[in-house]
Length: 489
Image 1: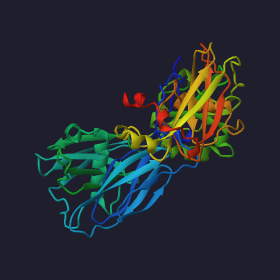
Image 2: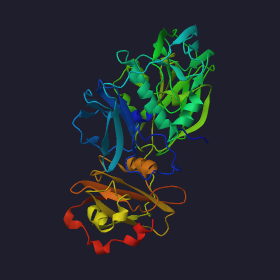
Image 3: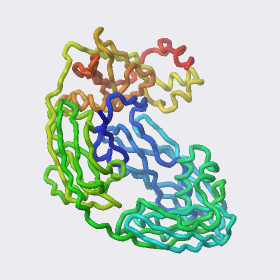
Image 4: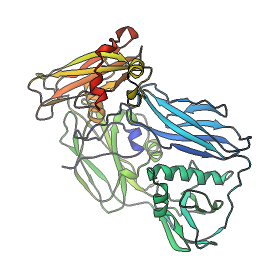
């Protein structure tokens, strides 16, 4: 039987919903990942942004920053990206600074480079852009560079794209280079060699565009070393609108259990549609139009299908909870049919009462003391400075097939606020199957260790919970620290 997964931004709307219980968990406690590691800013300065992802958000936690220069200010966290202001560069040369982003116990460095006021504005040859065909989701055009030997980048984006600013078009080039550097994983020249073009490109087609939306075709010269060779050249166009689909969608939910349910979606033609599910409370009080508006704000590309769906399963649901499955025609960024919904309620949680898991906390060690005594471990513990290292072990029932555990950076001991089924959801995505030797605890902050055994059929025992709040008085003497283990890694 197939398993159903969600992808991309839609996971932020429907968190922890469709994840296989066989998924190998990530070791990272929060999964904090900035989407850019380098920013190139023009001499004029301005507001810049760094999108980020957090796989396991910490309640009420914000991204903070650390930097030492006075020309960066106004740091803010919007929940999906961090923004800050770069002042105009009035010095005689280019300058750079390191900005450290901090989320819970994880840090990431961003290099900010700013051109000097006397750095020449990129100049070079222009492009002719001849639009030949416009559809509801595609455009066909010729791109004709004056310099036929020059390597260049061309594409099409909608004008509401966050990085598009016609008041400062050359900044788009640097934003694109930052993105290419991220994708290149250290081999920018090799990546550009794959995507850059030379000479005339006839009948270049870009598809996957949104219908009835203003876009621009753009082009700029770029060396394989990542140096801009021309100014940005672009041309506006608007895609056609899309016709409404006559696809008739119907949803069947069956084999409903405590933490999973199976799904069929039946169609009458092969027009594309989007589908998904969430707890019914998320749509409570909303009209179908309001629900569709909220879904259109998401990236639905990973949830689009054609034809029938049979025998797919939603895993990792909460027990005793009402869910809604939805589907609607969707193509070129537009909803093309009415919204179809089906509701179901999961059964009560099935628990293997004979399985127990004992949480064995401690000892704890001060990481600053560890690094001072063992300087060679400074890199291993660089993100734990100012915190405590916690040794956490577990004692499962002898007849358990295994166990799963994870940690919250808050008090999660109230079963009314965090029911067992929700804890199991989190553990199946972010949990570990064995002790982990790099548990960083913030002094004076509540942390909760949770875990449960499971039997050979994958049925869990009761969830064990333990709240821990460490102070400096709880730290063990350094001579008890298992240095040989860490030095041997």
